Image (cartoon, rainbow over all chains, first blue to last red; front, side, top):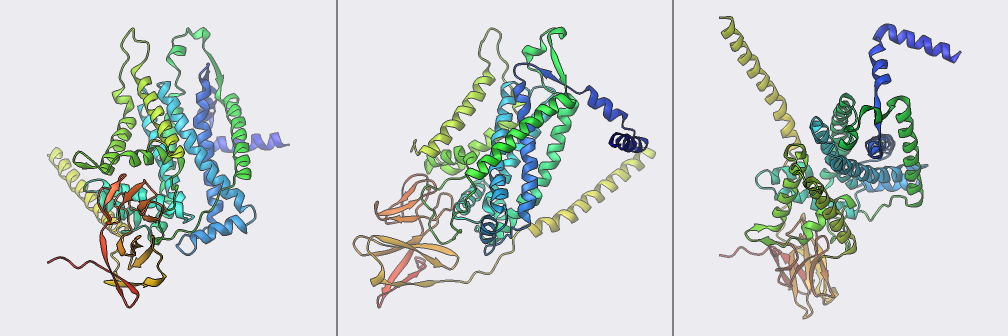
Length: 363
Length: 146
């Protein structure tokens, strides 16, 4: 009965849209099997977490009211009064953190397996832009509960923009909606967080996925060198997709576990006329930059320390985006590839600076 | 002939397209630029009674839209500075244990003259004038010199 209905529906659609090319594509899509294939799952997990964010984000929109007099109160209302409000907000908050985490992992795995090389330059670049957008989503969403920590994090974060020569000040006002962080900033960040950034993210995500579909999975060089008889593959539909789905289920469980045992908190309501509280710190994925800014003195030779910090990260960001185009090739006979050293330095820097930010060292 | 006509049309259509883009982008960008709000011109504010203000302590005073840090030193003297850290816009606090001003965001320190003495702040805090009239503390904008 159900099978007949299904084949009827298929026939109906097929008559109108000719599904053969799609089915042929799906049948032929294959995923290479090798020891490093674990990295193939990271993008999928990030994608799954994005879906979770869209879903829980839409739910939160039903109650959240942006505004200096309502933002903080409505988040408290969601946490205390709305059925399962605490759950959905906690999942949203944890999934945001996990999404950043998995996006970083995905990026570094791509970096170390050198999957960014020709012909995947644009996949790498779109992926890195997606990572920046995830951080933007995190930054803008962080302000919405309008609590003390978020308020000062936003003050610092937007003030950094103002340091950039020429365009800095107008850009800062554009972000803040005025000279200071105020209700106008909250309205803007709300627009960024729920409309502008998700829209841009979705467009670039579609491109990123199209690139991956068109080019297939990257195969590490060692595997690519093997004779065809020794290379193993599995079909994407349904084998790999089911493995993916299983992992997503695991991630969902971890997410729920975290949300239940460590629910998201709401801090004290922001007060523009109170000092920044002690131990103030941005979200963990900004801590390495925050710590760097803390360490640079007020003046280095003739430029202001903060400008130096901003320039430093701007240069690093652009360089990282363009990695496929300046990759340092390994010299024959050398055991360690120069790009591995570059990646390890980046990773160690991020880890040490983040640890220092939490442990209060290096001051 | 056909070539030049095509070129001419391309330029015409291209120009029209640019003009159209401009006519769309200009209002959008202007919309995004926040309007200037009139700010009440505050010259001085009252900040409570001097006899209520503990020695070696500080508090924030609202000076229009500007937060001002009013402190009373160990010796009982009043001083006031703009409370916004010159580094990245955080609001400083008075540390009675250190007996000077401190910004929690990036560990910036200022002495009791508002001078940046350690950490990342690049400039001193702008001073405000404090007068005590009949036990009432009055914080005012410093008079321009000359």
